[in-house]
Amino acid sequence: MQCILSIAATLVAIFALATTTTAQQITGVYVGNQGNFSDQNGSVTFYDTQTLASLQILEDFGTLVQSLILHEGKAYIMSNTSHNVDIIDVATNTRETPIMGIPSPRYMAVVDTDKAYVSNLYDATVTIVDLASRSVTGKVSVGSNPEDLAVVGHLAFVANSGFGHNSTVTVIDLTADTVFATVDTGCDGPRHLAVDHDGEVWVFCNGKTVYNDDFTLVLERTNGAVVILDSSTGAIESTILLDSQAGAASAGQDVFYSAESQEAFLVRGNDKLVLVFDTANNRYKEIISLAGDGTVGAIAYDADADELYAARLDADNPYTAAGTVTVHGRDGAVLRHTFLPA
Image 1: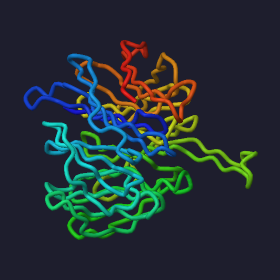
Image 2: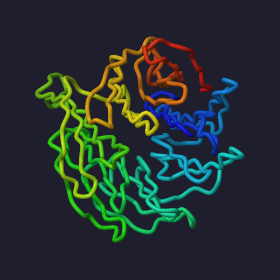
Image 3: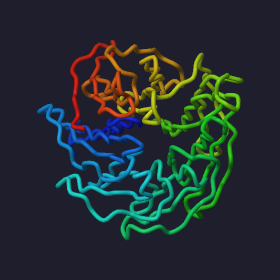
Image 4: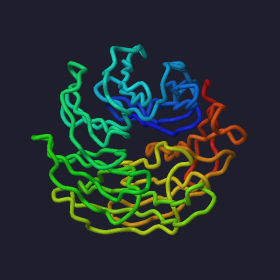
């Protein structure tokens, strides 16, 4: 099984849990390190959960790493500022020919064996990609500042964040590559999506903050929410209101869905809290307070070991220094630290 951890602003960014093919036991974690914006020094690290050793696979390759996914033995990396999807062969950890010409790639979802969608943060579109030929085959217009994508059956769901100023999810018909519906979730800043065991689509909204013109005064602040959609129609089934804003301490992996435990984990990174949702019964379950220094830029969960992975921004220099990963028990206690190479 493979786990991905993604955060932004430091050198720690995305978890992807690597698994064996038989028992699906997690053997390692891929970490996409976003890098410092001004230096464009993103990188990718592999952490071996058996030996506890880490290996930097890509080092300072001239971009910001936004997210990555694992598919058919390849790691696809959303290289946000170079407008590429970079590719690594996970068997050899070697870099392969990238998919080029994708404006501000944010997240990828595989919709068929050789077909994928990539959200374009500043282009209000989703790019259609042929994975076999590694080429762009088209675009679909969606809402403002699209982030995460989720695929169920013949539909793809796209979270239109609007940096907090949008509340919609675009639903795309995969067979025609056209918009099937636009759903207003009623909550500000949909950013991450998850598909549960029942095929329902969970939409995680972070909320929004509105400032005056010189950013000295908060004019409005809304809390986050979780909205559950019917995957066949996009209709809202239920809404779980939060008592604060949600999201990582940087623009990283706010949510991790565990199919094994049927739970979704939503991080509130600045106060180092993780909200846990029971996706089998569509309810809020518990809150976990993570010990350790540094705000949390991403979260992931290993159901087999019952361990949480948290990407931590450096406490003193969160936007320039390399971050770390802390591994926690369900009580939030730190089990071990992983100091990733810068």
